Length: 474
Image (cartoon, rainbow, N blue to C red; front, side, top):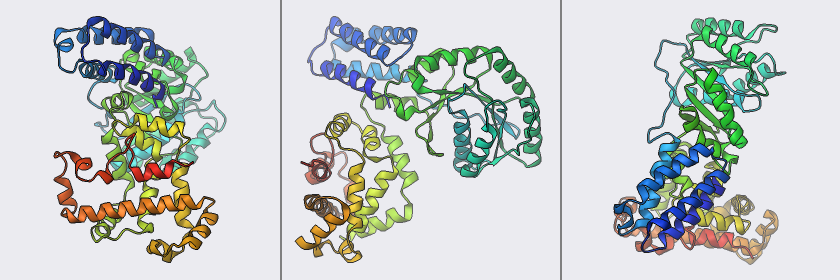
C-alpha cells in the first residue's frame, strides 16, 4: 500500500538529506514536488493544499534551516503533519461501553466490501475482545446478500440472524434487537443495504434503521481503490448519517493512498479499521503514526512485532530457541522459520514494515524476486528425506541432484539453501558463545548486531546476505 506515493516522497527527501545546508527556496521547491505527489496519489486538492501550507510554514523557520541536519528536520515535520492528517497519534477504537447489545451499523455503497467487513469485524471482536457477537443482514435489495452474510458467519464462527423472506429492513432490525437481547449478545452488527450511488431512499432507510436500533457506532465502509470517488461518497454519507468512523477496504491493493490521506480531513471522522486482504481475518486497526512511518520509509516495527506474536506459537518459539542454544538447527527448524515468514505476509510485507527497507523492496521487485522464493525453498526441504532434513551433512552431489529434480529447482539453488542454513547455524553458535539470548540483548545500544556479528547484519539493501544470495539467481 502507498507504494507509488512512498517512492515519490522518498526521492524528494533523499535529495533534501543529501544537501548539507538548505535555504527557503530549497524547501519550497521540495514542497512543490510533495504537493504534486499527493495530487497524483489522488489526495483531495483542499487537503493537499492545507498539508503543504502547514509543512512549509514550519519548515522555513530559522531553527530548521540553521540546524545541523535540516533535511532530517523537514522529514520529521512532514511525518508529524502526515500523522495529524491521518487522524493524530491516538488510534481510535470502537466505542463499546454501553448496555448490551451494543449496536454497530455498517453503511456504504454496493461493492465497497461492507458485508465482508461486517464479518471480519465480528470475528475480530469475538477473538480479540472475547465478545459474543451476532450479525444481521438488512440488505433485501441485492440478490443473496443475506445468504452471503450467513456463509461468512459460519466461516467466522459468529451467529447470524435467521433469514425470513419478505421482511423490510426496519422489521429485520427490530427482530435482530429482540433476538440479541434474548441470547445475551454483547455486540449486534447490522449490515445495511447498499446502492450503486447515494440517493434519498438509501438515506431514509439508514435513518429509519438508526432510529429503531440507536447504534453506538455507525461505520462507513469505503473502497480505497476508488480514490477521489471514495472521498465524495464519504462526504455524501457524512451529510446524511451520523457517522462515528470509517473502514477502508482493499488497502493492500491501494498503491496511491489518496482515499486514506483525505478521509479524516473530509469527514472529520477517524479511520478505525483497514481491510488488508480477502481472508476473513485480513482486517486491522488503523494506526495513523504507523501508516505515516510506512509512507516515509521509517517502517512499522510495532505492527511487525504484533503480527509475529499472532503467527508464532509460543511453544514452537521456545522449542526452537532451546535447540538453537544447544547448537541444534536442522532443516526442519529452517522450514518452520520459512513457514512463519509466509504466515506473516511474505517477503514484501516484511520488507514494507522494516525501517530502511524501501530500497531492498524495490530491488526485490526489479529482480523479479517475490514470495515464490519462499515456496521454492520449502519445496527443496520437502524433497529431502527425514534423515537428510535432520542431518544435512548427508547431502552429497548425488542426493543434491535428486532433491533439485524433485523440487523443480537447480542444484545451485540447493547449494544456496544449504549455505544459508550453515550461516544461520554458525550465527547460533556465536550467540551461544556470547552468553545466549541474554548476552545478545546486551549488544543493542553498543553498535548493534552488525558491529558484533557482521554475518547476521543486513547486506546491501538491508537483507541478510545468505537470503540475498538465495534470491540472486542468475
